[in-house]
Image 1 (cartoon, rainbow, N blue to C red):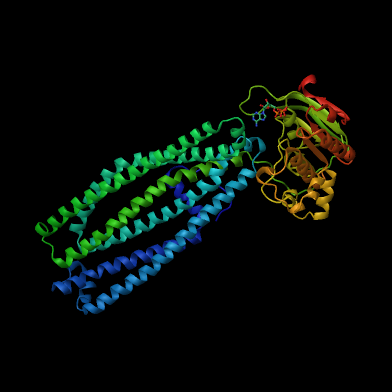
Image 2 (image 1 turned 90 degrees about the vertical axis):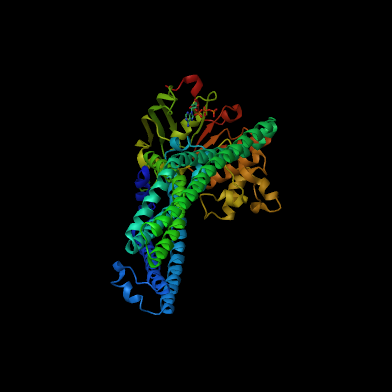
Length: 567
Ligand SMILES: Nc1ncnc2c1ncn2[C@@H]1O[C@H](COP(=O)(O)OP(=O)(O)OP(=O)(O)O)[C@@H](O)[C@H]1O
């Protein structure tokens, strides 16, 4: 499997090329050999029906086959039947191996594209990443990746079907080219009737995928904001949106299945009519002997499930191909926005000053720049408060200083060294961020604290908790092993903040960014956090975002983005 995602895919051949590249030459060679062996055993087995039928009917084998099938007709029927049985058993074994390989291919494709999509998404620039919705990311990594596996399996089924069909047709042509030509003509009539339904089926497949994504979005967004919906009485609205999305999926799914079933019914009816006409022509016009008619009919009867199987596989192919196209498009997009690779060199240090010189920043899709020609100088080890009204650019400034995003113009200098390229990525190792709504996942306090630093020991965690005024953990019956609940909901807003601060301190950062960190705290806890921040003075540079006067008192420098402007 290739872990590196390639360019976007377009069209059926593009899809085949992309899947082949992902599957790898070795797997394809093995599968190709198995499929060929399976079709060969089937073809030879069916050809043996000629001498068997001829012997039973007391006829000679057709002249065209007398070369090697003629002498076979002299053999005892029992021996011929035993040979056919052995071929059937051998084919069953090969089919088992093909199915096993097919399942492996599907799972491997799913895993490969799932991992590469997640890796490229994670490696993308923050500005690109933050524009992606959670629902879209979840759909891609779960549902769409599964669909790529199914796509691989259905492509393999198509290949198996095509090879088997070719082998069966070759056998039928070898027995009677006239009857087989007529059968092919009849099949073309059936195919023409089905082509008309195909584009409608593809369109319905795409609509189904869209409806499914809308439902997924409702689940992710709706459930995540359940608390907000309950507080503001928006539950009926949430229920209505969800029910609309669920109905949308049902409608799209029904429409899709209807077009599939219509094609199926049409196929069955036309195929039965064509078979009747064929038998009539074979007996009354071509006057074929039983030794020819029976094997050819046996082959044609065998061809019907092969063709229906092919139809089903092509349908799954059409339905799932958009998933591969979308994931490849999104990974190509993410790669185009990827961050500079970390070159492994040591992360830069902030020892003297951090400077912003003529910095400009405009978000995509926005006319007004957040910063234009902005200058700032921060002394290492100082406490700096960044304040100003909502939307003025406090978080954006912190994101630039913390190395999360880079400015569109101007420079950021760490001790006169530009914070560019991979230096910006490395600098992030020395930065810790406590957000307004801290990220906590449903696991123990210990696991939440050691996130990103798995080797940190319990003693160090306890010290960090004490430093962050989070001693409440020590009073819990399970202490560090207490679960925090989804998004930390089993703790108050202030407790979550202090857990997040403890996690940040565990990184031993050179730059600590605190985003409205005391907003959810009462006076007592605020005082304790302020004392913690005061005690950290000099050990690292601290950036406080917000406008709480108490915190501003701690600052060595106040940057009021609202009062001084950002240009
Ligand atoms: N990813 C983004 N894409 C587009 N615009 C953005 C993005 N992030 C922020 N902005 C815009 O940039 C401006 C500054 O946003 P920022 O979050 O930095 O402000 P802030 O001062 O931190 O606000 P608050 O105090 O409300 O958190 C706002 O106008 C905001 O709408």
